[in-house]
Length: 125
Image 1 (cartoon, one colour):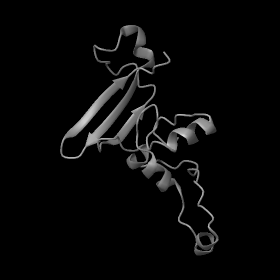
Image 2 (cartoon, helix red, strand yellow):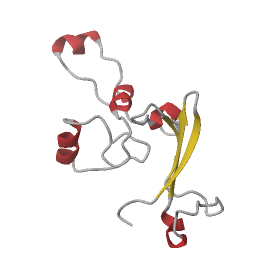
Image 3 (cartoon, helix red, strand yellow):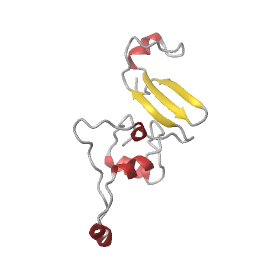
């Protein structure tokens, strides 16, 4: 999926989930805007023929904008996602020391409310 974590699923599972939901099933980022943003504009001939636009791959060396990371259900914008942040970055007390090496960092900006720094441990750990 186009969320910041680039979560992967079997195609059939992803289609089934997305037919009922607009979020990534793991991180709950709203992927509608990301899917739309990844599509190039339709050419008039394609629109008339009913051909859908395809998602484009990022160009080599292209830096994604913060908006490409996505939005949360409550309107926050994911500004940063680090699946393996530097070991020098202090982990909060609620992350057990044995899990420091697998902890992920997400920073979410909420307009007019500030930024939340969220540490999480993947469920499969």
